[in-house]
Image (cartoon, rainbow, N blue to C red):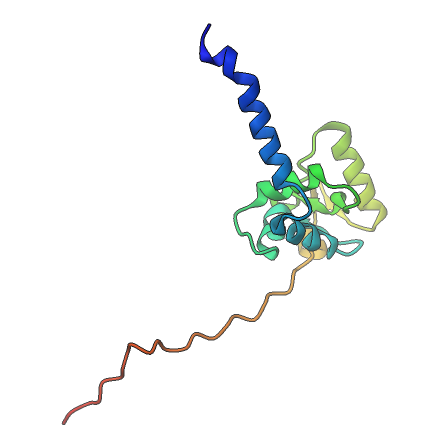
Length: 142
């Protein structure tokens, strides 16, 4: 008997327990993503990537999907794919579109009109960089 049959269940159980630990609300990543999603007001939408960036985790759009799948009480219907596309298949996608239309969101074909209905998160002021102490300005010699 190969390891694939003997080891499959313990490995899968380990991965599942790691994912569950990641999705607990005590995880700061999950908390920040949930907080960003809760900021989206009625009648507005945001993309998975924009939420990840607003939470401080650029390029973590897949983590936003995981948080939405594991969490309850979030306005999940206000989160769309890039460009305003509804990424959910079948009836779930129809339900999302219906909920958005009930909030006043308009569509152009199958996509949300992002220019009108995209929620823009406020950017935090960038900290000013101070010159490092090791560098000294050279005095010009004449």
